[in-house]
Length: 248
Image (cartoon, rainbow, N blue to C red; front, side):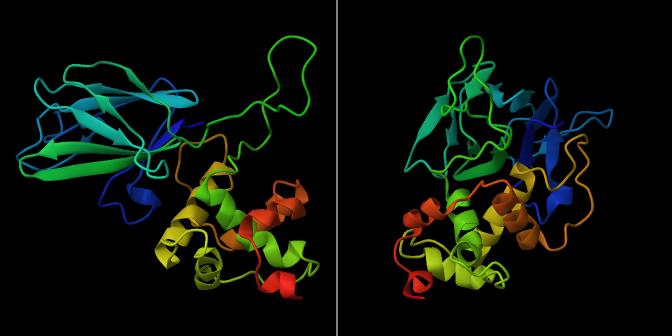
């Protein structure tokens, strides 16, 4: 199974994404090398021909900065400014973020691309093991991330006692989350829904790096999975605060 997903700035859909399995590498730079191997091309005169390399390694990835004079920055888009610097010439720097934005200085501009690491896993602290390694959760979800808020908002109508209620639209979900997340809008919510489909392995299948066919009924599939396996519980609704559902 793939370990990380690289999302170029120009990516329109999943067909433009690049998936790396553990042990695979992806060079990036201004010009693709001959031979037709996979390469993330950043066609800007301010980017080095061989700018760097991404390497997938299980639940995380590493970044090598092949520039001789430029520092790269890897940002955590959900980390309130959290970032790490990758110095010129640094090889194999481990990146701990589940969502990352790699930013490169290019002349007077800043160029970037995103990297997702959906295989981030968390130990199950509720059942301490008598010995050996702790058991990893079946679905590794971080409740502090915005994607979990989006999933909770999608599940809210059915968790509030209406098991056959229609799911909220993307616009309604954005409106519901705006008091907690002022930047919530249709595009941001849809992005998180798409990411959840990857994170929960609804698309693509767990045994292939192929992007797979378009997933219809994505919201319905996510909510069905979340409620069936108690990934979202009624107690999680407290994070949403008061809303129209509580008025009922």
